[in-house]
Length: 337
Image (cartoon, rainbow, N blue to C red):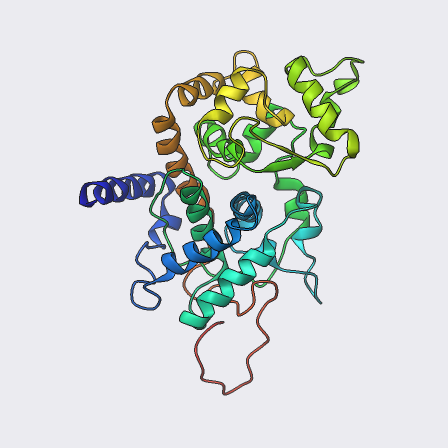
């Protein structure tokens, strides 16, 4: 165990050199004294959610991804519409996003043990890791100390989030804005090794793809017909990202891409774009689950440290869905602002 921890610690500091100041402001031991059982609390709630919803983990990691790619990892995605708040949940890329009820349950359990201490942004980061671990995936050290935003950015969510209909150049550009490279793009896309997607996000591949009057040539014909049957009941029907091990976190996402069984266009672009540097990365991860797991942990740390709010910026929300009410003058209670 000590050796394994040393490897994770070395990985943490290596990533620190890569992402710079934002990571320097975060600390994996941030809650060591104020909420020492935080990982266990989050793990317990996520495990309970998985007992009744196999998609719980995928829902939580999607929330974390879609949060970080707007104004950084500040839990702005969780804010609902309110005066002065235009919720990111109403952005096109977040339509149908789920899992807020699980975040509520985690926050409730954490508040019971450690009142007014742990941010919703950190809850998303920890819950993502615990979700991956519970699905058989890797663990990594999660830097902590993020604070929650008091604003949302619906326009940013509309423009910044990757779309399932985009080509590789567009995906690279959207990741590159946040300092994430091709390896990060391929590794983080591997989160699609579990979870589901609505037919509305991939049925355009079945016929007249990009106005060609033909199906998407990078979609295996037998798999296409399988998906067509699944989607015959409507665009809101969901299909597994991975038809082989749909609820397990493994390298099958990449072997599926090699077999032209990537569910979304944006998935298959990683392997089927001629001459792209991502092809070799897909092949490497398809060959070695260990390589995928190692790279995934590194990329999750990098993504989790996109412009976090720290120090006196932001607040520690009491409810993840709304900002804290303004504190009355003279209130000397616990600092959540």
